Image (cartoon, rainbow, N blue to C red; front, top):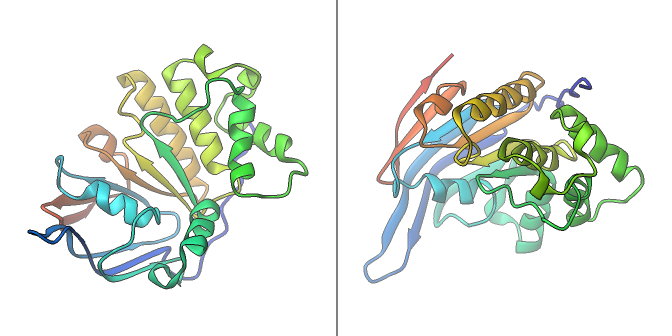
Length: 237
């Protein structure tokens, strides 16, 4: 496996959230996020935990620039996200954030390496050595020998590794992971967590939504959400 390149350190928090709120509807309104404060430093590994309906998925959507807050401030790498146009937010999202989802979201008719290469195509990056960069990303996650396979020929753990390789293409500031081990057995879950740990040790910031206690315990910090509020923040290591 190739050595994972270190992510350059930033000089300020990667995520700064203060008084964040998200309200849906008007009759009556539903407050999914209420007065949320959160700091995430470069190189952190944060788990957001809580029951269904607690607001953790809403927070993930705001963090990923997939949704806008109703109130409060959100700075990503020093940039006021609320001040950006939709096009600027899409640019920040595609270049600054790598997404890893529970359901992998791989294209079944594309090979593994083509799926990884699509990350840069969507970002409209210049082609150049795109295939070489995709191959390096697959080597990083231990799938250099599966590049020409179709996703349908891979196990669940292998498909999630492909998704992670796609997410780290372009060295995003943050990996934003939504239940990344939710479809995996315990042995495969452990291997994926080891992969996240290796990326994190080399400077990759990881923010992870999970309802699994064992998964959350692997993060550096846990944030517990209940009824749209952050009730508890504690270190786990």
